[in-house]
Image (cartoon, rainbow, N blue to C red; front, top):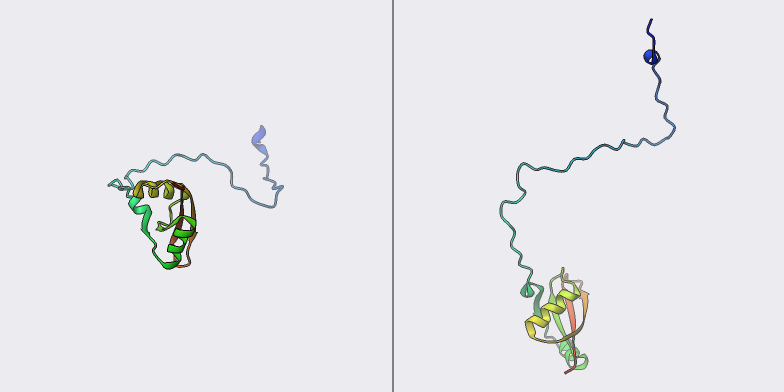
Length: 116
């Protein structure tokens, strides 16, 4: 005859309808092999950001009427990055930048120049 607390086996009673996995310890990853052998070179400079200026009839009218230059820029470029790149490339003081994603897949930047 067994004596003590181990004599009767209790059944697990579920009180909830959904099963939740128990929280277990997660270890940090320790790879044995490096992911990349060579360091990737960064080519994200002012020449990669601003691709080229636009020179169509409507753009020329925008330049004359609104003191605004139009550029095709990289899709990933943000407004502050475009502003910095234009001021470094062309030596202009930029007032503000508006951007437009075209249906062709390009990004246009309307760069407003400060008066003077």
